[in-house]
Length: 320
Image (cartoon, rainbow, N blue to C red; front, side):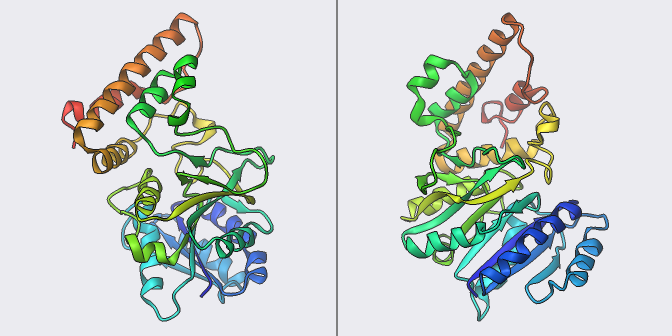
C-alpha cells in the first residue's frame, strides 16, 4: 500500500462525507491509496450515514468504516486504524491523518506524496490549512517551551519581539516552497512508516490536543525532520469536528481535557519543575494581559474562565 488515509469521525457525518467526496478524485490520481474512517463511537446515526455514503458512491473498494468500541480520543481513534495496517502484509509507505472537518483541494495528497518521495529524511509533513475563501490558517508551529508560555500569556509587543523565536504559532510562512518546522497540525499530517517503526504510535494518553506536538517532538529526537508543504492545500473548517476552536464559539469554555493534555505534554517532555515555571509564567503574563485589556476597555476574546481553569489544572495546584 502506498498511502493509508485515516479519518476519525465523532458526530460529524455530514462533514466526513464531504471530506470523502473531496478525496475520491485523489484516489484515482494516487494509486495504492486506501482510506479508513474510524467512528469514536458517535452515538448518533454517523455510522449508518457514512456507511450508506460509501455504498451509494461506490467507494467501498478504497474506503472502509470501522466503528470503535469506545471514545478514546484522537490518538486512540487514529491508532486503531494505523496499528493493524502496520501489522498487515501490505504495510502502507505513508499514513495521512485527516480531520473529518477538512476538504482536500485537488492535488493536495499528491503534493504531500511527491514531497515525501523526494525527501527521504522528512518523516512528517503537513498541508497548508486554509479557510473556504482560501485565506491561510496557521498550521506550522514551534515546540512549546517555558519562555514560549510567557509570551503566549503576556502578549506584549516588546516581549514578543524579544521572544520571537519562542512563539509557538508564528505567522504563516510566505511563498510556495516547503519549509522546515517543528510540528504541524494533525488536521492534515502525513507520516512516513519508518517513523512509526522508530518511535511507535501516537500516545493515546492524550485524549485530544498536544498528541501531534508530542509525536513530532519524539520524531525530531529520533532524527526525523518535519516540514510544511504549502502546495498541499486543505480547507479546514476550524474546530467544527471538536467544537473547541470553532471560530463561531470563540469564547466557549475550554474543556478539561485540553488542560490535561497540555499538562501531560509539559511534564513528559520538560519535567515537573519546568512545567511549574511555565505555568507560573503563563498565568502571570495572562493576568497582566487581562488587566491591560480592561484598562484599554477592549473586549475579552479568550475562552470563558480561562485563568481560573488554567490554575485549577496546573501542577502548581497539585493537578496530576
